[in-house]
Amino acid sequence: VLTIELSDMKAEDGDAKIRNAVTVRIQELFGNDMTNVADYWMYCLPPGALDGVAYAYINHYISVYNNEWCDRPSAQVHELGHNLNFAHSNENGNTYQDQTGMMGYSYHQDEGPGEFQLILSMMSFVDYMS
Image (cartoon, rainbow, N blue to C red; front, side):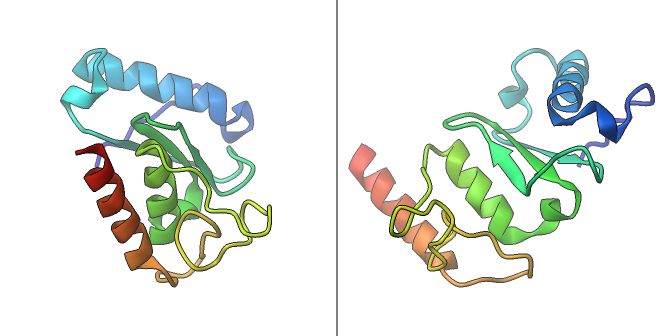
């Protein structure tokens, strides 16, 4: 765990500005290729900095979380899924209606249904790529 303090910023500056400042600071500490230090980076933002739960870049190494969602496994697995190039699972055309796996709805409690479905999907994806 790495804590980055940005004393000149506040939550009202918004997630994009804070995310960019954190990235610059990490690169100052470890160099421009952050994946030399860790394969994936989770940014846990302070309350009020991000509208919504979280987001991640597709096929990338950064995911960004709204405060308390940083310690919710379903949000972590969901966003890491995006980092691993997974899309939303959808149900009847609704992006977050699917509650059977982790690429649909995110649960606020520590556990939710479908933890093994993502693992099986990842295994299928790896088999497909082999």
